[in-house]
Length: 217
Image (cartoon, rainbow, N blue to C red; front, side, top):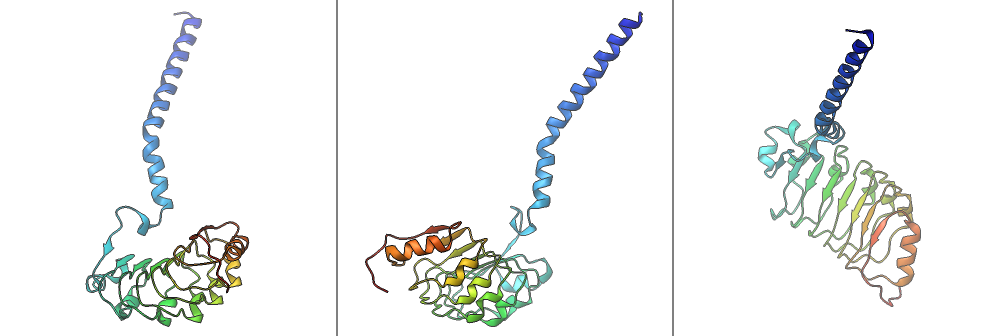
């Protein structure tokens, strides 16, 4: 075999190996990307994350509880056992009869999502701003009239749902919520002037509002 033929053979072999490697990479890419996504996605946000719907069962393995759903249980207050779950990330207490947000829950640094929609809450604590790690707060369908200025300290807040409450206005301190992506205010009557003010105060937030009224506040 001549030198030229040998070089041609080596070149063909090299191209074949390169092609094979390319095929393997392409076939493996979905798994590689999936693995990367799983590494970046928090455990409690993955599809396989377990949702506990019983507090008694959750308390049997408190260190493994990330999501607790206690909606529609006719609860009049937040059960004490909730505070014994050190890694709780998502707490759903919607559709109950809770009328007070206790100081204890404001100290749960692990909590990132709290749903208290459709309860009996009329007043929010002035210390609400202590929940600096909370990313989502749902307070829909209560009878809340005033949002405390301390809400401006909730620097991690990304979603705030307040629709169908009795709120008259929003505190100026809300302009400090630089990470807020969604503000839900439908079902509450505000004037055109208030609509504009809210948009100016939170220019990078998607604000959902019902049609304005000619109300004077």
